Amino acid sequence: MGFDDKVSNKADDLKGKAKEAGGKASDDEGLEAEGRNDQRKASLKDAGEKVKDAFKK
Image (cartoon, rainbow, N blue to C red; front, side, top):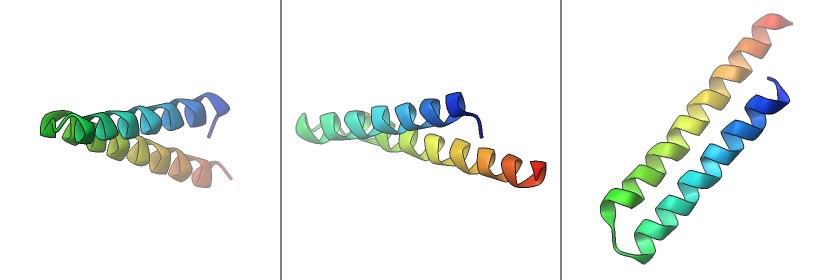
């Protein structure tokens, strides 16, 4: 996994956490769900990168 990919995935995860927290604070279920979705996407991207790395070895 390249450094850029790691940074991008972590940024997406943090963005999702911020959206989720903002949604909870403002009682906005849509924003909260969007934040959780962003976090899931970041996790899936990270897992995909790890699989690619495993096959490169």
